[in-house]
Image 1: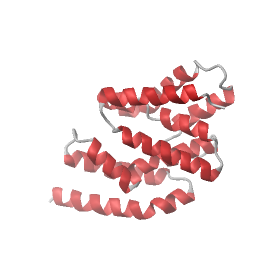
Image 2: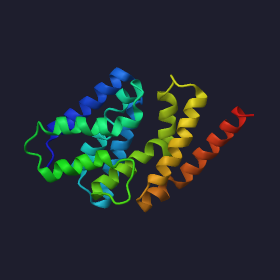
Image 3: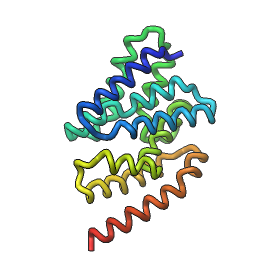
Image 4: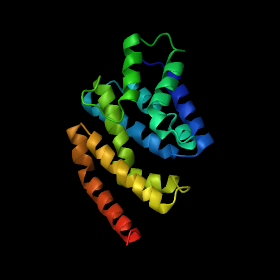
Length: 193
């Protein structure tokens, strides 16, 4: 069992990180965590591992964006997860590895380490493939130009669509993905005229 203090520390770290760097919006992280819990319940994954994984998987993304090191955010977040988890000796080595894999595999892999890792990856997709996530992105990334934000959303939508591995998630998000892509296509075509 993952201690509630570890979950709280991960939540606090993420909230502080967003508070300092301002983006992405905290609501996006909460969306992924919420969807992770729903999927864990539905699929029989360990909810405590998934919660830790979703809280840690992008915990240093705000800093990575600010430092223009986005490509490094997975490794940065993994290192932070290692640092925090080490404070909790009651977390077994298997649980530690499972959480670490949730962080390292949240952009998708061919063979997931665990169901929990796969759930975290699929939960992350809601940030860019749900209408709710896209609206959160638009509201919370006001420092980007509209064009840059639309290009980012378009690229991330394709990336996340290709990362989905759970059939029920693909089914749930398919219509929203199509709507989002049409919306972005119209915008990008008009800008490029």
